Figure 1 (cartoon, one colour):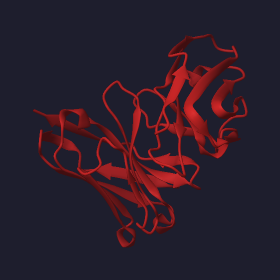
Figure 2 (figure 1 turned 180 degrees about the horizontal axis):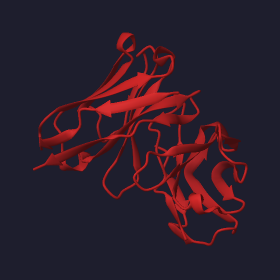
Figure 3 (figure 1 turned 30 degrees about the vertical axis):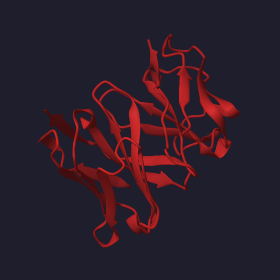
Figure 4 (figure 1 turned 90 degrees about the vertical axis):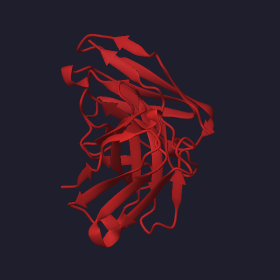
Length: 118
Length: 108
């Protein structure tokens, strides 16, 4: 069974940094492109970033480009999101999720909450 | 950037009813690039439909998707109690950003 477990969320001051991790199990992680998606409290879904299986292709939403970095370690079955210069509007649950054949986002983790306080 | 608009914002329905949710794109997109998700309170989203009309694994056949160009729909043929949730469409694949629509809430 595919499983994704996010960690690293917490309370951080505005302007601070945080690194999220996502541990994958139950599937061949190195074969899958991955995404980060976030959801502010009581709001809708916002796609954040994408990384291909080889890390060769990376995309970001305009709202985070230049502040966030996505990476992966296929040997450790792990995905990461380095978040710098955090703002109040970055407060959200952050989900890691698998790409499905470049058609959709398929398997989702349970999410990790990031709270940015000024 | 593709902007997705969903309508209506909220639907109040009863079990057994049929409903159609709309997703409109700001410009024409490939049907391949349109997906639908369901999200229940306190849970992660679940993929329902990909490629505009293909059901994801394990999704009941009362869920169906259709559309092309700028207009897409998700139809639930007969609402079950577990279908009351928020539904999102997403433009995904080929050209980022992979934007979501604002969602349609289906309430009892």
